[in-house]
Image (cartoon, rainbow, N blue to C red):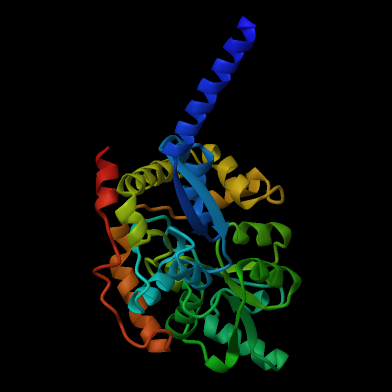
Length: 337
């Protein structure tokens, strides 16, 4: 009888502590694109740092930033982890958010598939390679990227028309999601694509004839990439959680740079889902397309330049002030610690 009472009392106390622990956890609904640029989130979450800081993180994946904006506008996510440019577009249309950290820059690269790659010979300008392809094949090269308004699409257009000075008759941009782009390159459904890690490491690992043609810095210098943004409502209701999130992300960035092998299993768990092995992810973390950075101030100027370019190609009607989009105070507090 005594044992039964003690057992019941113990279970009651345990249940009470479990209930209090659950109550102390702040639910955080995160939207993310499954790319290496989002690795700081995967490391912070996978290592248990976010849970230890009192956050109950619930992650939903999206195919592109523009698609995620709909969730941001409807209030179904609190935290956005994807490209900066869809946020700038949304901000100009009244869908507000605050960029609290960057995660990566110069993520996008351009690859040519086996059919197009031979035209990119040493000493041959990219515009001439694309022109030669159309002359031989009788059609423009099909190049995949995410939808208009996304960083991949904008970066690809900037490289084609402003850097390479290609003739628009020589290249057709096809909009598709991340997974579809990777598959399209592998099966030859497109001749080239703007991709990020881990897609770059995966496609070249499966087919060495897929050639890296331009790096992120060549396509758009200081190209702003993935960022972490929070909704004003979430920031107002949970300022301590936002600070803890940013602090964990800054620590995760350091791990990615200094101990990529330690970070790789967490990134592989988030991206691989049993399909991509940790060794491939570890290689992707140290590739030319992986440049991790946390300071949101570092991308303000490049974001303004990319926004101006989006206006020039018609993605945006006009440039909007970026003053209210970036909030560096959380980052500055994090680095003090």
